[in-house]
Length: 117
Length: 113
Image (cartoon, rainbow over all chains, first blue to last red; front, side):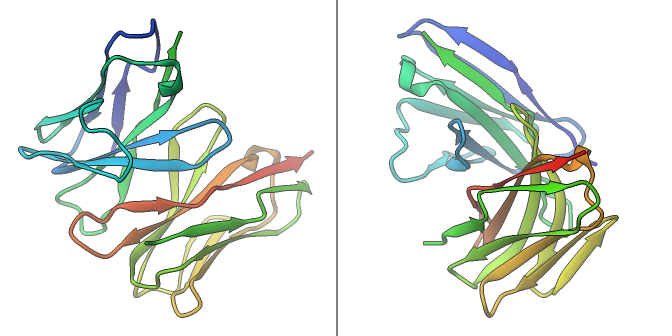
């Protein structure tokens, strides 16, 4: 099946710093990628929809100036958590939709665990 | 706004038992419905995808059904094994250009040896 990678898999940072998370589709092109956040014992909550070559669409309650999304190519989307605070500590998961596939399955990355001290 | 609910939140069964996980959604105008598996601290593994025009999908010991009119989907696991222990998530893809997924809160399954 299609493979989506995320880097880094785990990051620990000090409060106030910015953290960039990469999401790559390794063997297919993805015009649309999605960013989710998952707090412990909770389900995935969609943060934003990332479209190649255009601005991301953010869900209600998600600050676009705090969570910067760039989808510069058909295989790469990045999420930058700016001025991270302890409450941003979470598990961030991206998914990508294969633009050429008949069935619009979303393929998920392995996730990035962020801990802000 | 689509809401997805999963019952039960947790389930513990002895090995070999057949079991059913339930998922309900409020908006029947879905594009498809997917079932995922998530192991602790890991990402998601897609198990089954049912298009809105389909009634069920099967893969090995797994069978997923979809009833749009009642807003329900079930995941049937036959002859459960300890390796099936994980959290199972269902997600409904809404109609529209972006096809965002709305996830349920999951069912944490433990299969006891």
